[in-house]
Image 1: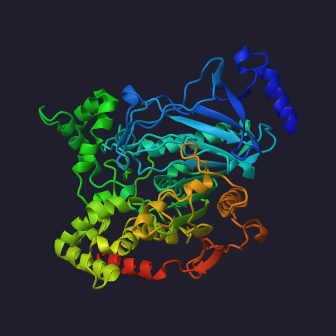
Image 2 (image 1 turned 90 degrees about the horizontal axis):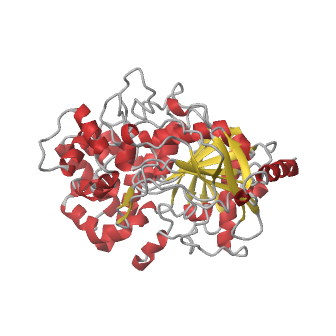
Image 3 (image 1 turned 135 degrees about the horizontal axis):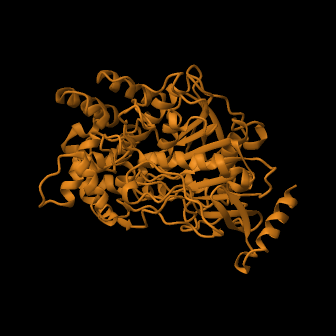
Length: 561
């Protein structure tokens, strides 16, 4: 049957202009696509790639800031050998602008077969980047590792920052356009993935950092219901400070003031929308550093973006992505019927260690109240905030002074304050309702691109985002792939884990596949697996002491923990 599918593709392509005769043709709802046959980075595995596929109409003009609409059809055969435009963005870590284009809603499909009878499981990956930067292209997310596990990989772009997450609190612009883009990707997968040999009933969504919090959002969003079967969320959750906006509606007016400081202040949302839709999108990107500069200093630690996901107002007409606090949605009635796996890395905050050392630690030394995450600080009196700050400093630093001499303590604090506790907080609750697994990624090697930044401080480890370089081949960085190395063994371990979960809903259906029998998580046992340099190790109650401490902080603040 596999040979039949390829022969049909070849016959079709050779009846078309000669430019497509070496390509592979797939018919999707909107038209025909011409893809490529490629080899993986080892040169031993063949797969098919289809890049730059439009999954929605270009969100331009009156569609700017609004929910995506289904893509238009095209005539003839569309060249799917190259990626589409990236979404406009500014990266505050590298201080780089990438203006791309507003016409950026494209996805990519990588499949080991074009035989439509194969019905392979599908992994749809949502990229990270703090809802501020990133794309789904193979400069970072090449399919070479995952596609060899006999799964189909789908990557995509979604709108970012202002263009993706502006909320005016109105029916027209309630917010979360970027998350709704992801929903549109999943709808496209349901309609078309069978044409690439995939099974629309076996879709797993996977994401890291902002992609991880996005995946978690989809587990509780009514818009995402029925569009996927399993979810893997790495290093992110809706409860992270950087994964939702405070005072979202005020931010749109602040943006307008920065864009036209000498003009009369806009006070009406209709006028505001008209103005913001008329501004060249490059200006919306250019103003982002000034928007970030207007934030509190502590938001550099907890929240690098100005616009991010919001709780939408329910107008009773439009479809909403989420209208309740995520924790209010963690009920048997609201959690989607899926299976989940969550994770975080060994030392998440190593990613920003240079920034902490140069800027943040001196600020935290001067203003202890900055140690309190915004989700708490926004809900307590100043006196309580100071008391909580003292408690946090005492726990992490003891009698030591908060200084650059104690970077290890600060990294540990920052990891739990910005990621670890929030991930476990969300995961523990959702595990009450769905089949669940948890892992920690602690493996460290030359592939830990960001964790290596801590080595000059004597703190090398597994940073935020480091797991990506074991799941994907990065063409930009082009790390060596040596099949005899320990690093390659870890690539095999984590990609097999993802593929097993996508296929079976179990990361270790046979003990020999990853070398460990992985038990399900529940609140009594709290089982997890740690990916260490020595082996995959089963443990219980991951970071229990720190989690209990942060529960006490939330309890003291009067917030449900």
